Length: 209
Ligand code: S3P
Image (cartoon, rainbow, N blue to C red; front, side):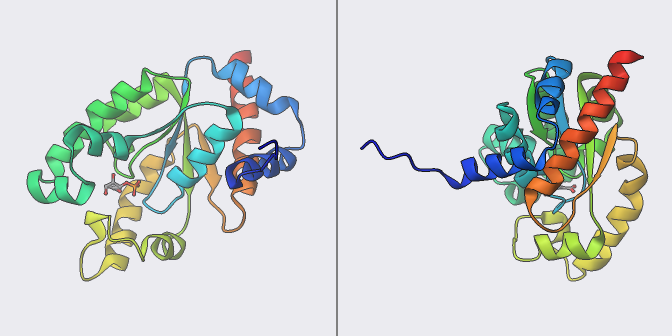
């Protein structure tokens, strides 16, 4: 009773705040964001969920995760949805869920790696949100997803090849995002600082045009 304990999440937020040189950035970003979502796109392992949660925390916005919402709606895990209903069904559900989540902004929305490949979803994300591609190279992505068995697309004998093929196909589309941020190795707050700075510039320019 009476002792104040700082949680890991709070520590992360404090560190991220310290990484942001200009304290006014957060307030400006929130004011200019209005009701829109900050939409994180990019490959599996890009850090959309881990960075997204911390970014939402810092901005005091809700964090929305499209994959989790799809799992909740289906009452199945993503691998189970793929196995039971197939990828096409999953993609239909993904399109509906992202559309629904986008209308509940302002929030930070992490999309699944394939969501932005759908043209309708992409247009919606760009119209109703600010899109950020978290970009990382194949070896980094592979290392991050290696230990988890929850990516059905990589559940093959040659995940490296699949990852490279997906990157070849998807990078030109991801690059249509409003903002591109390198999902660098190292402390999350560095990437979050980069995101806040880029959002500040992007939203100010958009407001001025
Ligand atoms: C997918 C990425 C996954 C999940 C599904 C398909 C993809 O989400 O939506 O396994 O097509 O790249 P994450 O990017 O969050 O891993």
